[in-house]
Length: 90
Ligand SMILES: [Zn+2]
Image (cartoon, rainbow, N blue to C red; front, side):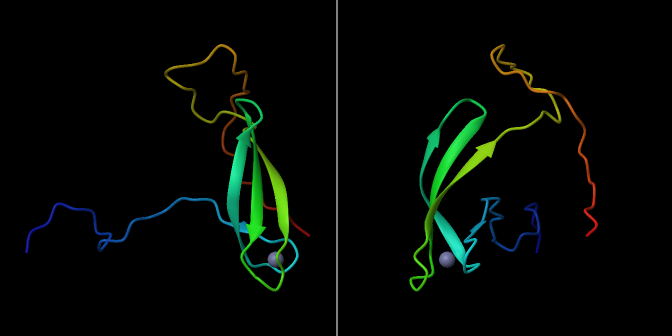
């Protein structure tokens, strides 16, 4: 058999952010989101554990650039920084 497809065996890799309920640790689902600015998005989440039922909001902020855009928006001012892989010790 010949195949030029990547060896993913038909599986699609989703890179969707998974949110966890801070109370019970179950998965939480994004119910809606609002763009506060080009760099900040507010998300409203609902815990999927019916016994918990926690609903809450998060703020997601773009903090810096790793590789600059080829189509830069002059209104977006982000510091260019490399990837920091710092480990947190205790
Ligand atoms: Zn919960």
